[in-house]
Image (tube, rainbow, N blue to C red):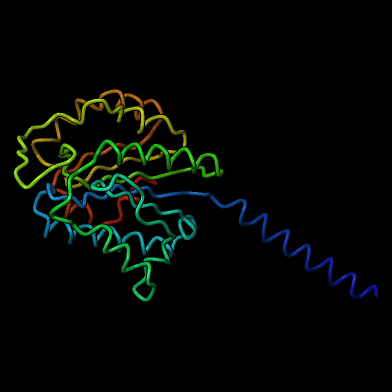
Length: 234
């Protein structure tokens, strides 16, 4: 009976140590806003760069810090989270990998609900903080062109275009204490300065809080994605 009791105690101790080790790991997340709308610039090449980003996310599984990272993909055309998982879910033999590719691929007939997409990001970050996550990387892959709802094939887009009215994007980006980096990729050249000006308070916040904030236009995105942008800021 004593031997059995000792074994039970040993098993309990091992379980406790394993639980403590996992609890000691950083609970981190990668939040991605992917533009899959009909106004995304150069959609064929854009989709190729999206696959580069997904490949980087898959490789994060080799890093202890990121192997259990919560990945959420937000669609700009639908303004909601369309895929959630961890890096290993993006491996080619996992059914969820194909689903992720399908979700981020450009959909020519879709509008672009940027307001809803950033609101969804804000909601996700609040949920993650409540769940005990300690860090989050935010990646926005978009030309940053908003379209009215509903939009049609005759919708006219004139650039530069102001960010969507009535949406406090600065608040959505800066209100979470777990955000450690914000990267914008594939931004339309005409939109870059407009959005940087609009996000002036976000820039001030990023400097004060030590958060990496970068804007990369469509031309510079491919070379910028040669290395993993998530790891670069660590």
